[in-house]
Image (tube, rainbow, N blue to C red; front, side, top):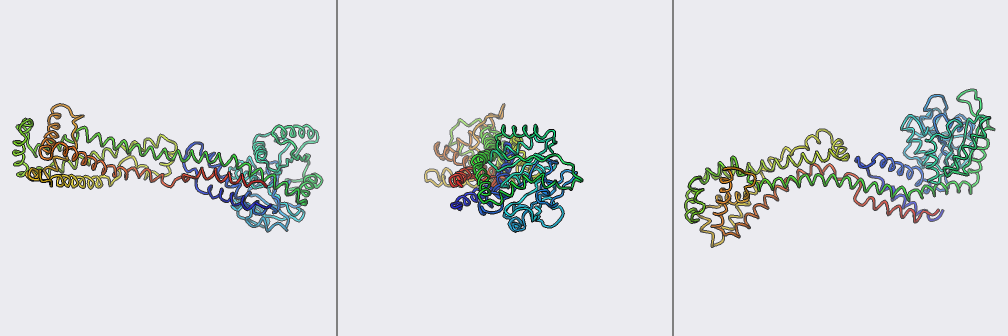
Length: 571
């Protein structure tokens, strides 16, 4: 089959894009998404890639069906040896057994197909999770039979392995019985075979002689109604066997053996089986991969929403800090008391409308003669800002955790993170206080630099020098908090007077426009420093998401590569 090199490369590229954990979180029907991904990976690894790499390799016919359908007995009867172990205990087939002609054993002993299953050779049962390889001289070269676990096994791992083996087959030999041929579970698999154009034969076992004709007719009808008309159907009559380990008489399975021998012996027939199943599997990628890409988009959107929720929580925290700067609450309590110590009250507060020059002269004496209250005011203001940062950060953390817990993906992520981490996320980090203190002190230094720079102008140097950089810096810091919203009663006059007094004096020294610019710069610098703190706090949440799930372009890549597969998929 010339031209398959490009198709093989396209399939290898597709497999590469399916390698990461594409569905890490509980977003949408994540169980179905993960199952679809696992099935797609499995069919690529177990069938499509190895079959395209060795198109003339022996056929693999997987014998599958329901519990107790007699799959192992059928395999033993077809090869004329007891290579698998039937029995009354269910599930009987604990590990799959592959039977091949000795001439083909090297192909199947290697990991050309089903590379994820370790090989076991020799007599006895294989261990669960392994693939036992047996040989039989009566089985014609070019064909192997694989006895699969029950498709309706009570053991979940067995059901999943049965589905995996069927997806790796060139040909399905689907075994059912006269009592169970209408069960829904087998028909769900048969419909999958139809959808993927898998080569298929159905074997009806244990058909009582009196019911053979009507049961066969009804099964033929069901095959036709499910789009499987023309499927080879073999009927094995109900026979009395001396024991569970006995094989069926050779004449009972001779039609099946003859049909299989014809497939293996005739290169054209064998090629037709391979082409049909391979083409069907490739065609199915045209719907399965785009559907998976849509699910990848949904996973990425869900992860992006988790990130956006955390970002919104800390945006709200920043808004809370901004409101704390505007509402005047920082000018209450300790800051207010230290301000009163700093400038005094009474006559001074009643003289706000008096001549600014007189006020400047009076305050100059206060500023130059009382350094301790200035330090105490600065410390109180620093403490107040730190408390505001902490309260805003705590609120943001609480909102982020509550929002995540309200989302299945968020709950999943927090549970995956463990109690130790998730328990700490609902409040600010332990080192926030020290980082806030560092940021506020740096901001205070920046404000002093602003005042120092503005005071260097010749027109203001003398006036600024009469008050000192530290004192004017304190007044500018207070001016940042200029609104009195949220304060009631007598505190309106006191706190309002604090900010008005600060602003009036600054305007007298620097001018109206300069004070507005200074105040704006000081406010924005403080907000910038607090935003940096909040970004670090927010990173505690977003770091749990970073690197999680598929890359941004995964869905687009999947769509592109399946298009390339379809363009090169003509066999």
